[in-house]
Amino acid sequence: MQITFEDKDLEELIAKGKNSKYKKYTRNGRFMRALATAYNYLRMADSTNDLRSISFLHYEQLAGMNGLSSIRVVNGMVERIIFREFEGGIRITLLSLDDTHYGNKK
Image: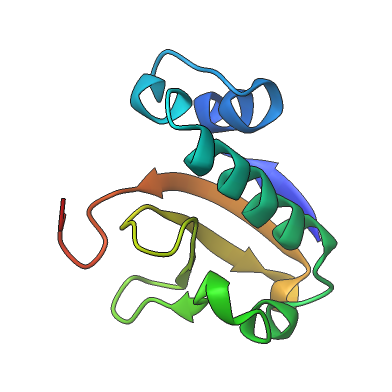
């Protein structure tokens, strides 16, 4: 899929592995490896149906959120990548990295 970032800080975090806005995540090596893996699955998927078949991503369309969807970054953590789908799942615009999805359980 073609991925366009609306959050340039998130783009920097994924591309370079560090960013001042997301400083708390850069210290967690497990999280950063999982974020890179999740991003690669997003990039390689032809459609959102491909994301559904990868069970550990826990892809879901968010109810009541006006077309937003999400995937989990790491099992056992609440952080999710929230994104909006366009053109039948061909292009994804990443909106945010969210640690409050399902309530902050930390």
